[in-house]
Image 1 (spheres, rainbow, N blue to C red):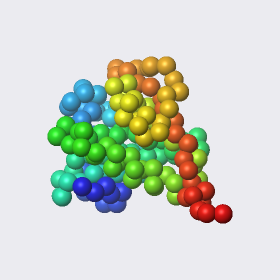
Image 2: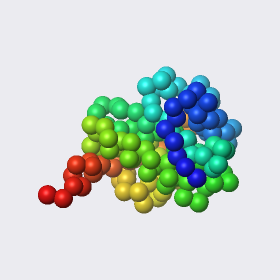
Image 3: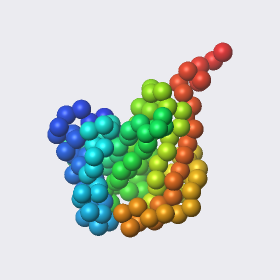
Image 4: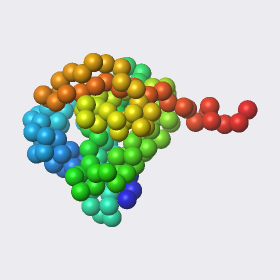
Length: 149
């Protein structure tokens, strides 16, 4: 499996297709909430199994922080490292930008997944689209700080 930064309309539609299957069909999030006004100013990532889209995620800059959003994996790919691959690709992308911190709103059941990736819970539980969430953050190690002195 491989993650790509969506660069064509077809790849973008693959990302939207995965998001609709997971969030709209599976979790019953209204499509008008899922596909929103931030699509055009976001970087979209798609995980492919061969030619088949299997997962997606979105990234944008918000208040000088990297905002990780819309991470979703088709059911048959869950628990197989697919989420790790998408998150690694997004974090590598973010390290090339002038952001020092990543923020995300995790569905509460997924908090342990993000904690394993180094994110920390910084909020009480809240509802987003009727689903319990927790805000989480992670400090980024910039590429330059990894170079030997």
